[in-house]
Length: 355
Image (cartoon, rainbow, N blue to C red):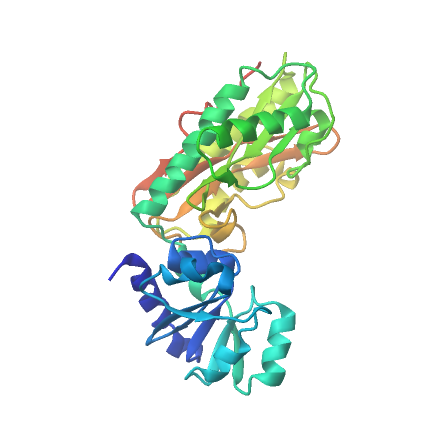
């Protein structure tokens, strides 16, 4: 039994508790989780007796390569309702967060079986990573660290935000990344106060902070990191805020371990930033899981009371954002272990860099 068959078996073990006979899997990352390949234009029907991949003629040979899956070829209109009508299950679980509304309504009106929306069954399995998933993430994060160190040698006054973003992306793609993790953030000056600022034609100037949040994918697994650097010089206020964020980030790296709740992890950084007088300037959560998606469970947040398990891969990214002035965020990706973390971002310096 390969690891994908083991994952299917682990999913099916949850069906009785969810009140379903099988799960119609339509989320692309969830399909990928059970096949090891990009799951575009495919769906899975999984029961306790096995699994079937559903796709059209274009992907026939692709689908037939999965020896642990049965294959059902849909028609040119990609309709899968005929297969679901013929399957043994009468309680059809569908992925609440992934199934298009049009398909759900079609199933409700025409399938003739009970449709039960469920959420989180596959995502729960995906939280804890195996050794291959960890290695792919490590490789993606290494490329990100290398890209950061490269651009630190070329950032200068007069460079545009878009130009910097392109340099980061090209570096990673030219060295083996299969894609970028998300739209690269590379912002300067007052725009660094926007946690998800969009790179534009703005020009880097002496005295600016520059924040870069970026990553890439290897075999579908995402990396993520953020660094903030100063260009030319940094004011006393800029250094003060940077040092607070750095202290919060490094303290989290020292104290977080498996068995803590996401709330407890978030509180470490939030208390430091609040006590320094900048609590209102830290409006997002401390971090999130990564894997087949750039944001996936679990989370380090004020609302996440779940336990962080060993071998989850998490970001640690506190920040302070002062509207109209500047912002600072520092982010590492880590593997959470019983006795602490393994930081995947150690080759990209975190002490304030003035270029």
